[in-house]
Image 1 (cartoon, rainbow, N blue to C red):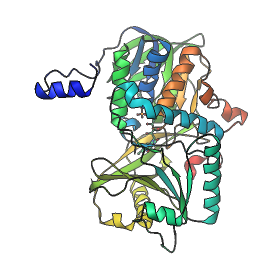
Image 2 (image 1 turned 45 degrees about the horizontal axis):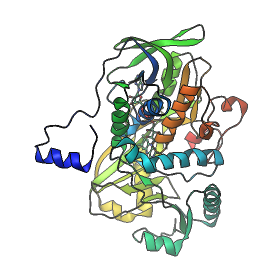
Image 3 (image 1 turned 135 degrees about the horizontal axis):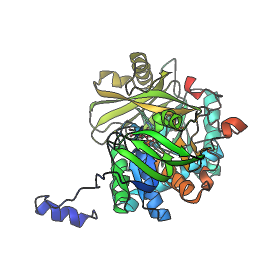
Image 4 (image 1 turned 180 degrees about the horizontal axis):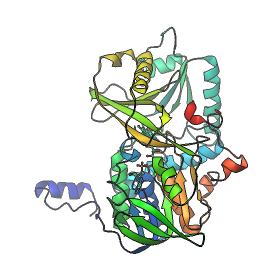
Length: 416
Ligand SMILES: Cc1cc2nc3c(=O)[nH]c(=O)nc-3n(C[C@H](O)[C@H](O)[C@H](O)COP(=O)(O)OP(=O)(O)OC[C@H]3O[C@@H](n4cnc5c(N)ncnc54)[C@H](O)[C@@H]3O)c2cc1C
């Protein structure tokens, strides 16, 4: 069923009785050409582009819970392509371009809102670092504006500019950055993939990966065995666990990251704003809640809940830059398990096992990557060669030393 103004009007006057389910809840079949493990944004986008761009439709997406129950439905929805390193700029800008056409492509309202992402700076050194990043972006045709203090004050007058400890000196703005509604992205890709013949199998946990003569042969799941020519891992914070089923040890650590939403208030914050003197970022949802978050919890965990010291740290960051939020009540907080790679950049690559592919290492920021990740992973699976914008995201770079260290923090981005 195609969504349009006409179908909306027709259903409104006929009592909303003719809407059909957005996707089929499929039962697993005995075999598939491609099985994707993980019904988050990345897994579903991969299935969609496999079907749409490569004509491969004998595909299943296996999800242990319900689709979007992982990080795809837990993130703070920021999309941007404001990177420094060329290999990251190319990839994330391709993602931004896909975001810009996503609603038309999927025929689904993913609520892409290009409200601008503003990174605040608080010292001359930080200004120079931001100027360098902005220049790198512009050299690659990406929008970036370095704003001085007066321009930032005109844009977001409610911030605390004169706080003696962290005075705001200016900001780097990416006007095309913004937000998209996370669960709508999941549902939109699921619906579009399903329409092209993909099976979306929920409540189906993968418990084993069968390998025969160095090649993947199939999977053991809580809903039986499944044969597959190709198996693709897109399980974010569970990547190490799944890879271990195939005897692989990944350069990934799993950490909890928390997020928070306040009670709803009138329109107040019309950008995404990040504090530059601590880890805190904030935006406002269409329902009025202020959505904010900060750093990962400091220790490894597979639990989808966080700890109180990190809550305190995030709230301190918020109070430092925007003291007015101290009067708001927090409505909800939650945690997701993020897959921290050891150079802060992702992996989209083959594994040493034939027919087994890996999509992982998204750290803090894989939501914005969802369209390009799906696009490039599908390309790799279909053609057995990397897509040009993701060619650097190799698994063996941790052995060869070709790291993509966006933040220049060395081999333990999880500790910074
Ligand atoms: C609090 C928080 C805030 C964030 N904010 C942002 C942001 O603002 N912008 C941004 O770009 N990124 C953000 N991220 C990161 C982003 O959400 C993730 O990088 C991205 O969602 C990961 O890809 P995914 O959507 O496919 O993962 P997921 O949605 O986690 O999908 C993986 C799926 O695999 C399933 N799975 C795991 N094991 C198995 C198994 N054995 N069998 C079957 N299925 C299995 C899981 O249930 C899960 O549904 C945030 C993350 C968190 C936690």
